Image 1 (cartoon, rainbow, N blue to C red):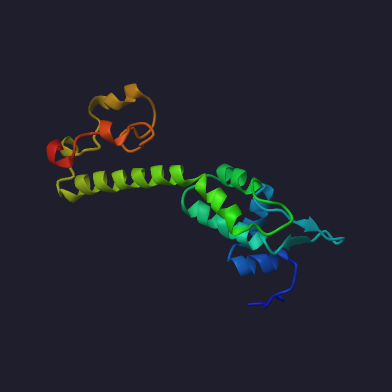
Image 2: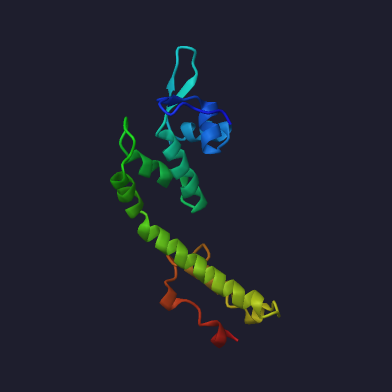
Length: 166
């Protein structure tokens, strides 16, 4: 690993890739999508400020959480330009996602619980599966995974607990 001087104000794309663990092609993609920015030297080479490392880490973590790139871009646009974001900047940004992340956690828990019941019973029979949709009844309610997506079917309106579904 190439050591970048601690007082270096800018990084090349290769240095940023090495320090962040993200491929150069991904950094170019992030830049094309407006998630990060660079300046160009007289020789048309990209140079990134050091705070770009934090932004790349934020993008990667957000992607792992399943946050869409458009939402990530909007959040990053709220951060200050020309200075490294402070703890307060990051706290404000993350607070805006709390509700969405809570909703995702709830959806994942419901998915886990329903799939465990269905597959865990050992029969793999659709007539006993909590996720079954006989005669496409849920199609009348609209598109999407109606029983899993908490935005479409709040938990209190969902299918009966697995012990009652059998």
